[in-house]
Length: 228
Ligand SMILES: Nc1ncnc2c1ncn2[C@@H]1O[C@H](COP(=O)(O)OP(=O)(O)OP(=O)(O)O)[C@@H](O)[C@H]1O
Ligand SMILES: [Mg+2]
Image (cartoon, rainbow, N blue to C red; front, side):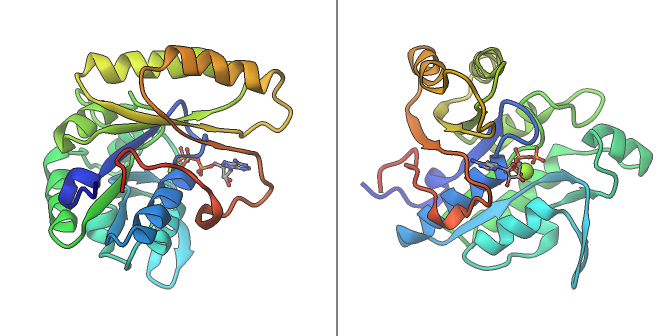
């Protein structure tokens, strides 16, 4: 059954930084669009930039906009962008800025008013601090979105995945599904690790992404939390 409106939106978190959140978010955007939905990516908080014709932009934001139905305004897709690739609350402090959740919510609502689905990529892992009091989990809670967890499959991922599941459930958020992303082609016992997670994560496995030297989000097959 097709679910329209923000019902198709998700918050994508990961077991760590660099585990494939952007890749999965872009793959979900392609999938949503293939289902006929107007889908936009959002990365509320980003640290690290590259030169673009629009000025310095975070590379994840570039990728998310490229995978979206149209390039929505940068100020809405990425309300907080910091130049140094460091922990966001530290980058914000250095810039004399306090990351606030209210403007993030406003930007999300503006995007949601024009699209059928927003894929929101978190920043780092689930409990990355945003300011002295709030963290990325508070952002997911304010957005009131189901969470998709990207597990970067490598040694240590069982602990990271299960801790993240616990943190998601502790905030009374819905874990809508998870994706096993093979970021280490040398990982020993991949299948047994995958099975161990299947037995312990209380949400559907939406996809298993094999290691590819140049992963193309448009060709990655995964299921969406909702059945279109
Ligand atoms: N299945 C895969 N096979 C090969 N390389 C991958 C795979 N998944 C991700 N990568 C690569 O790993 C790097 C990190 O992936 P990605 O940027 O999606 O992670 P992330 O969780 O969004 O990171 P960040 O915390 O910086 O936002 C990228 O260079 C990406 O191309
Ligand atoms: Mg990313």
